[in-house]
Length: 470
Ligand code: SF4
Ligand code: SF4
View: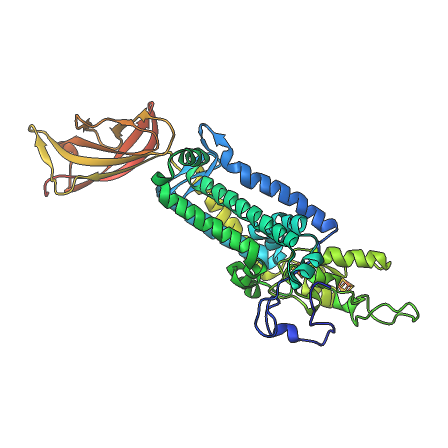
């Protein structure tokens, strides 16, 4: 037995007194979860291969000579699937963030902690990488428990040291991969090849993150999911009786009781074998009902299905099901809250799509030079001095041309200012706009300036031309 369950009968509610990873005396209860085996575990293993491949390979992929995916938070520069986003595109990220939060809420209302069990990086790295390495080096969970109870032999100590070296190295690799997502893989290689003294700040950050990952995977483990993670803490308010979650079918399973081959069975289908408890990485007994500590890893489904198959009973005593499905035997249905969330999600996704599609690669802001009034040009014209800030978000340099759109007149660049925009840069231009007095009928005239690239109008900017009082 790997964990001492405190819920051996259905009336025992002591599991509510404290989280599963804490003993009666308030100490940490180390969980030696048994190795899961079964259909769901196979699916999760396959998914984790794809997941890890994408995680480690994505920073290496380049598109048009730049990273395919990069989230450079310190510089406010983001490349998502080859498209560069700047701080000026922040509103797109704001909408994306709101869309993501609504998506997570909706997803959780319908599917419970499916994200936690199948794609959360904490679960993937803990259960599919670090846990497997631990089994490989230190043996099965029950062997580990036995070894850790007694005095360590030299062989066991060496194994532990090797394990921690591997854990630390892997944590360092993960921290480097995260850094590559932030500064790009090329920059990371450049930094590695340069003297350490030139990058002490970055190295310090790298070591802090390595230690963080190492401590999470070597020591903190299930406590991240059961106590620290804010998403896990939100479950209580997001779940309702229609939420799909890992559930024990108490109508079918209770009253639970061991198999007695000599008697005719009058009890429920649960034979109280505790396999579902032994295999749980957060140490809970799913038969007590939905608990916040359940990360939806499906290990108990696999364990119970194997037991049911062995004793010739239908599988699914523990399965994905809503509370209403178990209690009232209702089919899954879309309730009002789910419909409201889905509508909101569709609206936000459409807004998001429009923002991305209409996003400009060249963004121009024009304003009159502060403190300057109009100037008289000869007897018949007036001029105003303007500044333009032109953001070139592309990886190419090119010339632009400015033209007046709604008013006859001229734009004269100040001689030392060029209209050649450098790649990925903010360019400052200064120019006069000259308009015939006949066109000016009020103190402030609204004008439009067209921004042209290779003769094609790419943006129209509104500004104000100042004349005399009339
Ligand atoms: S109760 Fe089942 S699904 Fe939930 S964490 Fe434990 S083993 Fe995983
Ligand atoms: S694995 Fe299934 S049969 Fe065994 S205790 Fe858990 S629910 Fe009951």
